[in-house]
Length: 482
Image (cartoon, rainbow, N blue to C red; front, side):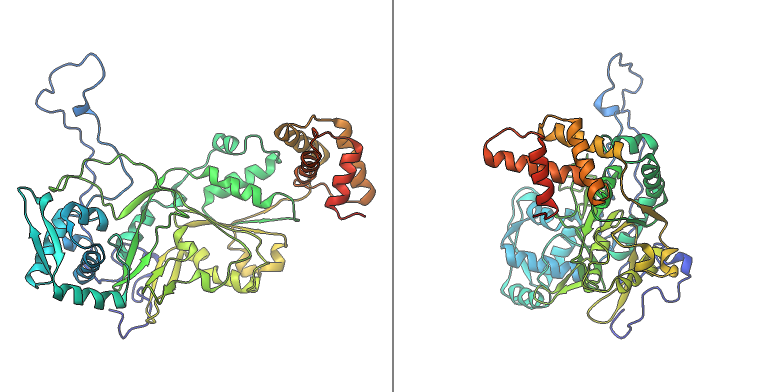
């Protein structure tokens, strides 16, 4: 549908319904997946009393975040042509494969594969080289015609992994497991920040911000703990989400699942036999809510679709990989691209929870922007963006200098961690340095200075002590005093 049309897919759709399933594209019939059946089958002996634990037959079915398995080609949400192309490429690269092996590789059940393989056989692209007594014993191989066709397909795209899901199914799943539905309570916050020396007013701000689902802007001087605290927010993410291996858009592949970003979890799955047993759609991976971190290396091209011309398919940008989770942009203002340009890129996504992406063909489509964005910067908000953008930042949290009690508490914590005998006189000695040179108390300094004391002791082969000489050496070394 994109060939002669470069307009976004949502044109003609009412704005509030932009991400409603069915409002995006019609490249394939929408998936019609059965609802999860929560009923319990008590079996024919339901009237028998069990004085002990319930029988396994009466236990509720395990719950998984993965969608139900598809049963027909038209339920996949992907064009039949794309699936046939994928099958041919897999058989070409892997050689002869049995049906279970092929099913495990492309993550589609036998009921779908049989229809596709039947078509390939009718077109003389593949052959069934041997047959046993069961379906599992069948093996498939490409014919010479099939191998020629596979080479043509591979010149266009080298993707030969799990089958993609449709764009509509991806949009619906992201909405279903939205990070905005996650709730953060005060007890959860206390657990996440246990042992962290931080003002209660700041933790309260973070707790409210995580419940809002809106962007968070953390700012303050270098060394105030912005990055450390921002990364602690990961502990507040709860629940598992389904991440697709890839998404098909206009017969193009956008790879989303990234083992470097997504942490897969073992989920209870119903038995899925080769012979059409009930199961889950394994084109999705059950994961913890994702966390994506970027810093000064972030550029504008990185937040757009990355098309690999050699491989012939796309890598999803970081904000798409972060959907349903946390997207931390650290050191904002230190990127090569001007901060204003980078911030302007996020105006529409932050305001409307959608993001526009473009294919190399010129076609455009939209995806959900369901992330909690955490901007961390040494600069004031007014130095980075105008009022139009700042009002889209739900929470602006300042992390500044700490007071003496917090400085002492952090110092003692680090001493315990490094197994250095704590001395209140040592803290007083450092506080005198701060006062004499008018240096503010920063959360990073106790650890940074004690690391230097520990490193020197290791070099000298001695136990680390908080003598005035050691502290003066660390101070002068850290602040480049000669």
